[in-house]
Length: 405
Ligand SMILES: Cc1cc2nc3c(=O)[nH]c(=O)nc-3n(C[C@H](O)[C@H](O)[C@H](O)COP(=O)(O)OP(=O)(O)OC[C@H]3O[C@@H](n4cnc5c(N)ncnc54)[C@H](O)[C@@H]3O)c2cc1C
Image 1 (tube, helix red, strand yellow):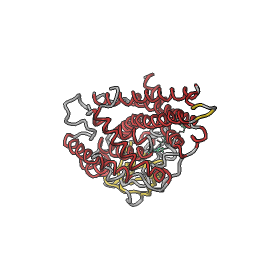
Image 2 (cartoon, protein in one colour):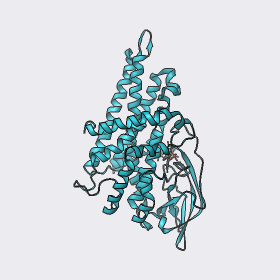
Image 3 (cartoon, protein in one colour):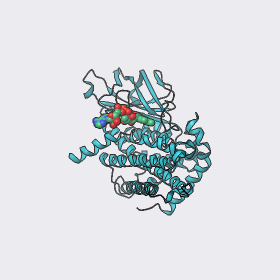
Image 4 (tube, helix red, strand yellow):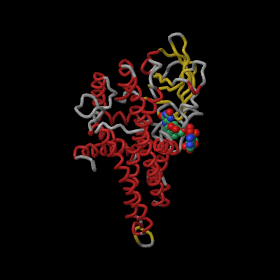
C-alpha cells in the first residue's frame, strides 16, 4: 500500500470537513476550557455511522466468539481484518491529531483499551453489559494500570489488591495518570490477587467497575503540560466490594498479564497514526510559513537552514506514513504485530513527532512560541507520545530484549 484508495480519501475529506465545522471553532474551549471532549466525539461517531458500525461488528463478533475487531466471518487468512475497517479506524486518528491529539487519546483509551480489554477476555454477558456501550461511545471508559509507585514497572511494583471474601472480592488501591479517569462510566481496574503470598508472585486480575460504586472515588482532572482535551485523573479504591461477575472472564486463571501486554501492543501501534497527524500538520503549517514570512528581504524558505528543517520533516512524515500503511497491510494479511515491532514503531514515531514539532516551533520564531500559531500546542502534545503507553526507554529495552533473545 502506498496511498489511500479513492474511497478512503473521500472518508478522509469528510472527516476534515467535520473537523473544520465542529472542532476548529471550538478548539480554544476544548484545549483550555472545562469542556470534556466526549460530546464532540459522540457527534463524530453519529455523523459517520461509527456507532452503528460498532454495534454491527459487535453482534457479528459475539456470534462468532471474536473480539469485535472486524476479523470475524471473513474469508481471509485467520485473524485478517478488512483493510477498509483498519483504514477507517486510522484516518480519524490521523486527522483529529492535526488539531486535537488529546481527543484521540480520550477516544482511544475508551474504545481501544477499555472496551478491547473486555472484548478480548470477557464473557459474553460482560461484553453485552459493558463493552457495547463503550464501543459506540455511549459510555466512556478508563483503563487503569499505573499507580503512584508503579509506572514502567507496572506489574512488579503494583500495590492495588483484590482479596477474596466469601463469593466476593474486596478491592483496594490507587491509580494515577488515568485517561478519562475523572469522567469514566466504566473502569477496567488491574490489580493483584492478595493470597498472603510474595507480591511479585501474585496473579494479576482485571475487574470492571462502574462510576458511583461505594468506595470508588474519581478525582478531578489533573493539570498537565499538554493534551488538555484529554482529561487525566486519579482513582482511589477503598474496600470496593465486587462479585465474580465483574472479574474479566469470570476466572482467576485468565492470562491477565499477557492480556495487558496485548493492550500495550495495540496502544503502541496507534501512536504511529497519532504521530502522522501531528507531523503532517506541523509540516503543512511550516511550509506555508516559510513561504509567507519575509526576513532579510526574502521568504525564510529561501534560507538553507530552513530548507533543511522542512526536508527532515518530510522524511519523518514519509517514514511514519509507511509504518502506518504497513500496519494496514499486516492487519489485512492477518499478521499480528509483535510487541517488539509495536515498540519499534512507537519509539520512532514518537521521537520523530517530538523533533518535528519542536523544529516547527523554531521555524516560526517568536510566533512559534505563541498559542495562536498552533505549533506550540502540537509540541506540548507530542511530548506525551514519548511517555505514555511505555516510555522511550522502555521501548528501547523491549526491542533490544527481543533482538537478543
Ligand atoms: C497524559 C497521560 C495519560 C496516561 N494515561 C494512562 C492511562 O489511561 N492508564 C494508565 O494505566 N496509565 C496512563 N498513563 C501512565 C503512563 O503509562 C506512565 O506515565 C508511563 O508508563 C511511565 O510511568 P511513570 O510515569 O511511572 O514513569 P517511571 O516508570 O517512574 O519512569 C521515570 C523515568 O525512568 C525511566 N525508566 C524507568 N524504568 C527504566 C528502565 N528499566 N530502564 C531505563 N529507564 C527506565 C523512564 O523511561 C522515565 O524516563 C498516562 C500518562 C500520561 C502522561
